[in-house]
Amino acid sequence: MKAEPPLPRSDIALFLDIDGTLLEHQPHPEGVRVDDALRDLLIAADERLDGAVAFITGRSVATVDRLFAPLSLPVAGLYGLEHRLRRGDEATIAGEPADLAAVADALEEEFRETDGVYFERKGAVLAIHTRGAPHALDAVCAAADRVLPQLPSGYRIVAGNAGLEFLPLDALKSAAIQRFMQIEPFAGRSPVFIGDDVSDESGFDYVNEINGISVRVKPLGETVASHVLSDVAAVRRWISALLSPQGTRRSSAA
Image (cartoon, rainbow, N blue to C red):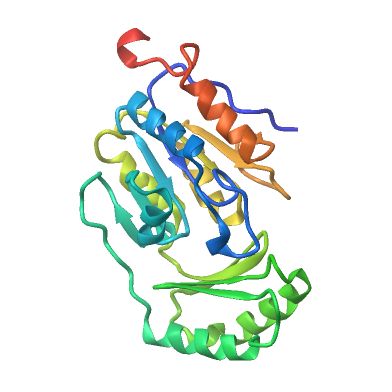
């Protein structure tokens, strides 16, 4: 049984998934709400870590900004296909390719009468959510496998806790975190990455390779993460403890 992560004793860079990590999953992706307590916690973390806090998420940058407004942190959206590396920068945007749009149209028509199946068209990424219709997951997976050859060879299917996504091969959270670690204020710090799903595993791998702390929330199966947290509430408690006087120390005080 893996333990909860320790409180680091050196400057860190904090990378955070959103759904299932900071926010409870909802049957519909648009059903989530960011409460003031979470927003205040992230503001405090950003101040304490001198700006070395970033979202690493499958959501688009525009959706993240809408959810967390007026807070605007650095973010890697769509698994790194979109990003805003520094606060105030203009975000890169990944549009929807025509062949992915055609696949999405066909699958939406196929499952049009299946209640609880929701299609989230996120530019270069197509997500199909079955949290509201778990009985339909097998049929959705079979249909996705059937149409995958219609997409360029650079696309793959990644199955998650409650659905699947069509992703380009270069949509990897590991690459997104690596990009941040090459620039200030993240460079030279020890990375901590917290996530909850299969799509976070590449990020855990990379963080492990550079001797950081990888944390999976409520893992449902095997994970390469070095530590675990039980649920969203535990993530928030851990971040709060991190910001306490006994938590992360600045390098000047180490």
